[in-house]
Amino acid sequence: MKVGLGLYRHMLTREYYDFARQAGCTHVVIHMVDYFNQGGSNPRNNQPTGSRYEPWGVAGDPDKLWAVEELKRIRQEIEGAGLSLAAVENIDPAHWYDVLLDGPQRPRQIEKVKTIIRHLGEAGIPVLGYNFSLAGVAGRFKGPFGRGHAITVGMDGPADEPLPRGVVWNMVYDQTAPPGILLSVTSEELWRRLQRFLEDVIPVAEESDVQLAAHPDDPPLPFVRQQPRLVHQPHLYQRLLDLVPSGSNALELCVGTIAEMSEGNVYDAVDQYSRQGKIAYLHLRNVTGKVPHYRETFIDEGDVDMTRVLAILKRNGFEGVVIPDHAPQKTCAAPWHAGMAHTLGFMLAALAVLESSSWHYDYEPAPARSS
Image (cartoon, rainbow, N blue to C red; front, side, top):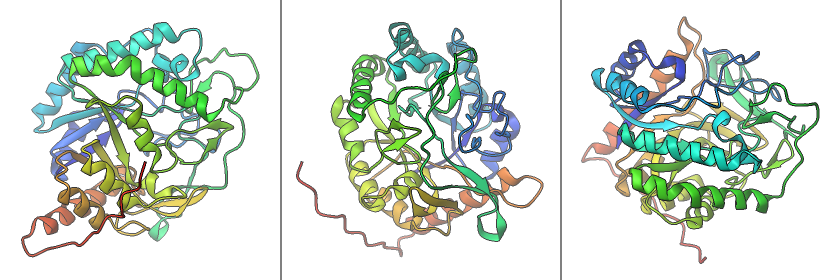
């Protein structure tokens, strides 16, 4: 098992790479999407949050794809700092909004996604994380809710205000869109769109030796902003995997999101999907509560026993990368750095204990459910 750190677009510098190494990381997961672009309530000193209904920011240039040379340069800079590049996380909404919306630009945009996958393969980047979602990560808010009044994120009730036109995946893709709202679609229609997407791109991913890794819906409610969600319960990950069985159809498993779900058991989910070898990489985040009322917490508190999660992964032979997801911000001159350093220290200590020959952590998975 490897320990890594997720870095946003503006963090792809030697300073942040050195911080990752100093904190004990061997790998990084990078974000090429600038979630903070022109975001009125989305400062760059924290995870992207926006406000409850305000989008994160404005999507990128629809005609500018990530070039092979750019990706290779970033990978080489990361390797030059003594790290390995494990994955690129998320696709810019500007490049695939009509794939999500099933709009008129879909044929052109699905080719863009295929090109992005090919470019990652050529650049030697093995994983592309994605989240097939209309509303995206919406309906949350931040405040001093953490231990010692640390700034953290949570949810306090459903997010039912409809999506305006020109917004998808919680980002603005069309600043000139006319007034109005995006009409709701059914859950089955969104699953149909996902299946079509996977059928189109998985063969390209297989040819490029790239895994597509699906993040569950966060917040994991059946509907957010009057639009359906896909993986809002743990068992729905299996439905996603079964749509197009392939070594390139994998998961970006987020422990915090699964813990927020109203059904299931986070330990059973980690066990089930790690035993299948379907986790490309994993987010660690602790929470208290369930949707639609929860708070993100420091990793060493909350409802999830993180050492138990890591023990299950170790028992099942998981050899991928584990990264902190979000962390509360500490009261100091470098709140993001301090929060991440705290999380990484906990992770490294827990893994060291699990590697000790004197340590044994019992875990009995739930009986397998018949399909």
